[in-house]
Amino acid sequence: MVLGAGILTASIVYSNYLATRLKANEQKNITLYKEAIKNLTSMAKSETYDEACFAFSNAVIDSFPLPVIYEDESGKLEGFNFGPDKENDQAFLMSRRDKFVAEGHEVIAGPDGYAKNIYCFNSPLLGYIKLFPLVQGILVGLYIALGYFLFSASRKSEQNRVWAGMAKETAHQLGTPISAILGWIQYLREAYGHDPGHMEVLGELEKDIDRLELVADRFSKIGSEPVLESADIYSELSEVKDYLQRRAPRKVTFDFKQPESTHQVRINRHLFAWVVENLVRNSLDAMDGRGTISCEVYRQGAYDQKTGMGTGTVSGQEDH
Image (cartoon, rainbow, N blue to C red; front, side, top):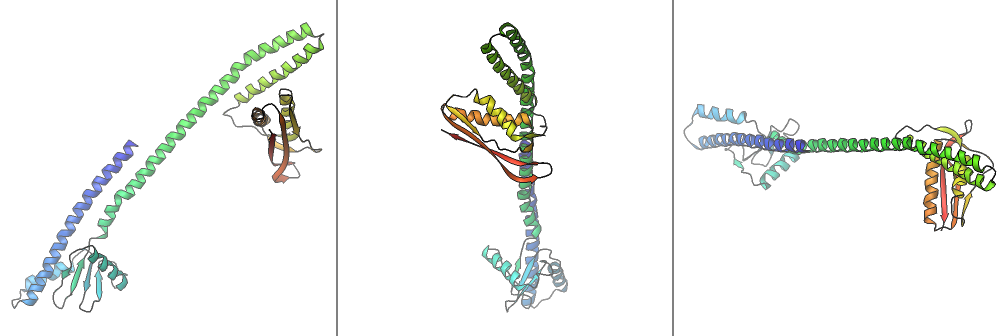
C-alpha cells in the first residue's frame, strides 16, 4: 500500500509537471500566432507592404498546430485541427466557441477579409495528460485493493491451516484416553457382569465412548475434502435422535416423522450427523427443559428415479 501510494504521488507530480510544460509551450505557440495575425492586420491597414513579412506570417498561421476556429462576418464558423469530421460541424464548433467565451479566454480579432474573430484552443493532449493522474490513481487503487485482498486471503488461509492442524492434533490426543476408558469399561464388565443395572450403565458408557471416537474422527477430517456416500437420510436422523433423546430433559419430546419408504442421498455421514446434533442441542438450550423438537424431511429440487439420488432439506421446529 505504501509502494502504491508512492507510485501514485510520483505520477501526479510528474503528470502535473508535463502538463505545465506543455501548456507553457502551447501558450508560446498561441502568442506567436497572435503576433502573426496582428502583423497581417497591420499590413492590411498600412500603405507599406513587406512581402517577406507577409509570407512569414502566413506560414506561421498555416502551420499552427493547435485547434482553432475562424468566425467570418456572417457568423459562419470554420475549424482547423479538430479532425476532418468536425471541422465543418457547425453545432460542434458553436459549442466549443461558446465554452471558450464562457471561460473568459481572449478572442483574437482577425484581419480584414481574413476572419472577424479567431478562437485558439489548447491541444487534446493537454487534457489527456491532466486526466492521466486520475487513470493512474484508479490503476494504483486497484493494485492496492488486489494486494490487500491477496494479503487478507493469505492470512485467512494460514488461520484455517492452523485451526485444521489444531483439530487434527486434538483428535490424535483424544485417542489415548479413549483407549484407556475402553480398557476400564472392559474391566468393569468382567467385575460387574452379573448386575443388569451396571451392565445398562456400561452400555451407555460404551455409546458415549463411540460418540467420543466419532468426535475425534470428525476433528481429524477438518480441513480435508469430505467424502460423500449414499445413505438413508431417515436412518441417519433416527440415530441422532436416539442418542440425544436419552440425554435430553424428560419433559422434552422428540417428534421425528419416519415415512414408510427410505430415501437415499449422498452425504458425509459424520458431518451430517454433526450438523443435526448442533441444531438439536441449540434447540434444547433454547427450550428451558420442556417442549417438543420436531423434524420433517421433504424432497426439493432434482431427483433421479433410477439411482434414488436427489437434493433435500431438513427442517426442524421447537415448541417453547
